[in-house]
Length: 71
Image: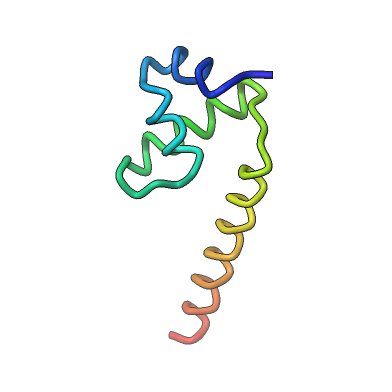
């Protein structure tokens, strides 16, 4: 199983940047965040927080869908 440090080394970024990408911090670009997430999956990184992120993303998509229905 990969660590945050392994992901950072593969991407050539800091551990802090990987952590921010995995946690959905607003001070990194969406593009970099997606690269971090894709690399984490590719390398087999797993955390309970990843499941929370999936749930948050699902909820955001549902909210956006509901807003479109209202418009």
